[in-house]
Every structure is written in structure tokens, then in C-alpha cells.
Length: 354
Image 1 (cartoon, rainbow, N blue to C red):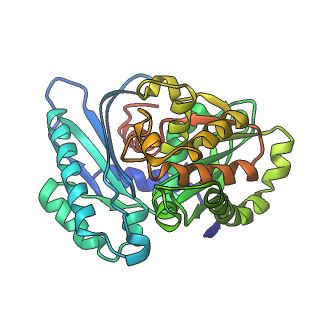
Image 2 (cartoon, one colour):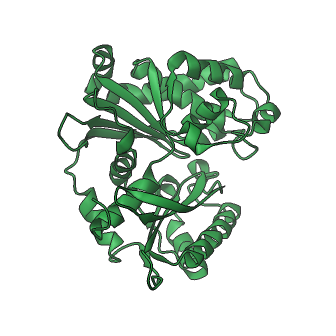
């Protein structure tokens, strides 16, 4: 785990450079006589996600989405390399994304990769293959920029009555904790951030994900809690939470899954999940139920599925450690994050949105 003070807010400048095609962006011909579409692709350790949208007066309108579990980071923590099978799955998903961009006549797309590619020693050759076979020029972003993008995507869910927020993103290979200041009248900013060397894939590979009992779950929580503790102490999270001036905001598949299970949705529905508030007892009731289930039972839930049945408990353990460190009693769920931050950065650079 690494602990960092807040860096100067240069992420938007870097994002603008890349969005203009100087690094990691892919340009396509814009359709004549229509507003340009933008694409944002987030290649994570577990998922490959694409969002296509058009700017509007306030924000943007989503016109296409894609998400597929590719497990790019499968085995990377142990081997240090991307496996042939994982790369093949990912390239197949990226070909679908490229076809969607062509059909949508996307004028500009930014594609990023995160922890799996940061760790893997053979990532350069993989990204070269991706460019040859799909046309995507994928850039590996730093954990600092990842924090800035996550904040940019989640700003609409920050609550004006609380001057501080702990924003977290539980990924496949790492977990980002972002301490945010959003005093009245000021633009939200990252005061400090850290990247924990624990994500749902890496934790599930270490502790197992198919059969997880209470003792194993407690061991996962304890390991993550030890990683969270230095950041929590440096930001005095416990005291700040006790003063009532902190919002806990989570963006990840873990928190959206817990929300979907809590709502007992027959199928996942972003409109019902994004922005929902869950009490800690609500969260823990769902987690307790999932820990008590078999893999087959978890995978059968329409908000989990076979692709995530073995990693969801690891995500729950990471979330429990975060809730203990920031005991505000309530969690707000965000089904948004990096892709939305990417889109807004490009659109603002072009003057398409404010």
C-alpha cells in the first residue's frame, strides 16, 4: 500500500492533452450534420466497460453501453504476467467495443487501463496486440489520475451538507480511497488518496472465492483493515465521521451489487441503484446473507451471476474494512465513475459542456 498527499490538480490538463489525440486517444470520423458522439473505455482487472454518449446542455446523454467480465488480471498477482487466455478474452471484448464505436460514429474516444496493466510485465506487448487487432490505443493511467477521474464522474452524488467525503472504488486489482473536500461554493477537490494493493480478483485468488466461510471472511477483512489504517489515521476519519461532516460514497461493482441484492431486483437496474443510500445495517444484512450462501446460490442471483459469484465476497470484505474505518452509518452508491469522468473531461475540453 502507498500513501500519498494530494497532488496538484493537473489531471484535467493531462486528460485534455490525451483527449486531443496527443496520447492514448483514438479519433474517428464524425457523422456529418449531427452532434459528435464520445466514447470512454475502461479496461480494468476484472471488467471491460464502454460508455458512448452525446453532450447535452447539462452533462451528456448515454447512447450505448457495454460491459463484460474479462478477468484480464487473472493470476497476475502471482505470475506478474497477463495470461494468454485472459488476453484472448479481452481482445474479443475490445473488438465488440470497436464495432460499437464505428456504428455510433464516435468522434473521439479515450481508452484507459488500470491495475492489471500497471502490474503485468508483458503489458506492452499486449497493448501492441490490442492496437493491431482492434485499433484501440490504450493508455495505462496512474493511480493518482484514476482517483481524479473517479471523483470527476461522481461529483453529482456529493452531498452539499457534508464538507468532506470518502470516495472509494473497489476494483479487481486494487482499491482507491479518495479524501474529498467540497466546501460550499468551491469545486470538489482531492485532498489525499491512497491505492490499496487489494481488489476483488486478487483477494479471491488469495483467500478463495467459491467456498468462503465466516473465518475466511474475517481474515480478509482484517488484512484490508490493516491496509486502510494508515490512511484512516492520517485523515482522522474516525473523528471526522463522528462529527457528522463526512459522506461515504462508493463506486464499484461491489456496492452496486449489494444495492441490487438489497432491493431484490429481478434484474439489475441502474436507474434504481445509482444514488441510493444504504444504512450500514442494510449492507451488513446483505453481506451476511451472501457469506452464508454457496457459490451456486450467489451466482444464481440476477444481480451477481456466474462471472462474479466467486469475487463478490472479497468485495464485501473490502467494503466492511472501509465502513469500520469511516463509521458514518450510511453509504451512498454510485453506478458511475471513471468512464463518466473520461467523457466529461473530453467534452469540457471541446467546449461541449460546462
